[in-house]
Picture 1 (tube, protein in one colour):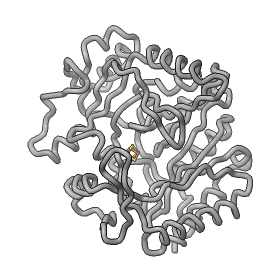
Picture 2 (picture 1 turned 90 degrees about the vertical axis):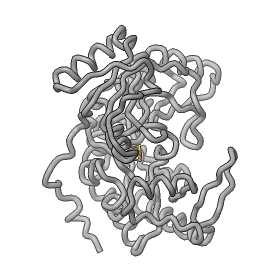
Picture 3 (picture 1 turned 180 degrees about the vertical axis):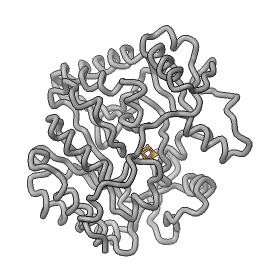
Picture 4 (picture 1 turned 60 degrees about the vertical axis):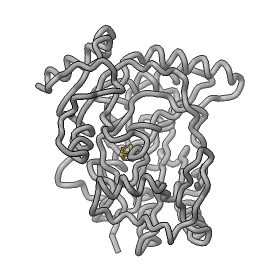
Length: 355
Ligand code: SF4
């Protein structure tokens, strides 16, 4: 079994901030101050810069095979204007998904972006954040006097891109001024420094995605490690943000009870007392679709991710393709165990859902 003291030791090397290898700009993006700023940053980094007519269609992405193109896309930044200003729904964590970026540089084997972003999931950031925030304000007004929650991490990990775009801080400060608006996002990165002095007014819930050591080690390449994430969570709590943890995907693996008990204990040991006063947990069991399984096996052929349909329960989807989840007896065991552990170590925390 893993011992928490070992796992709370700093890693030999810090996880570095993301620097792409190639950057594309839509020409009109350079008419926006954010576009110009990102261009200056890319030039200062000495990055190759290209132009694209649309951030949705890059035709000259380098790479021989599909796998090459996939890997290169994950290191490619595209700077554009967000045209669709209709926000998607984002149940159960929020009412709406607020656009901020699309794509992610990490390589989590299980990530649902594997299927939703297609063959070339390059990382798109948007320069017209004023338009996006105006739209958010309209959604807030429509739902008044109810509170409206916006999830900023549906299609990306925005903390991992903050040093490039600065958009998350804008969104946090905007929501800080909205009596009826709330922001939420989740991250696997520890680069929280630029967000610590934001005027959040406690309207943003800052969540970290954490998992049993087995899951982080085997399925989450190119993310910050547990020690870095938990240290960052302490800083965020110290800065007064409401804090949360998403434990996802919860994976049934050999020794899962020890692994998840250890995780909750490590969070307890590492978190300063001030972080526990307004703390939430969200719990999501592992699921996959047939399409996702095929894609994951092509992209990560050696993955240890268990995706055996025979061992799963099929759950029909609202829009056609269903998902494979754990059979009820396993799901119930996972749920009961996680609740028990969290309630024992964090009696004051709120468990928002298990799905
Ligand atoms: Fe997907 Fe999140 Fe991993 Fe990025 S960090 S690859 S968005 S699961």
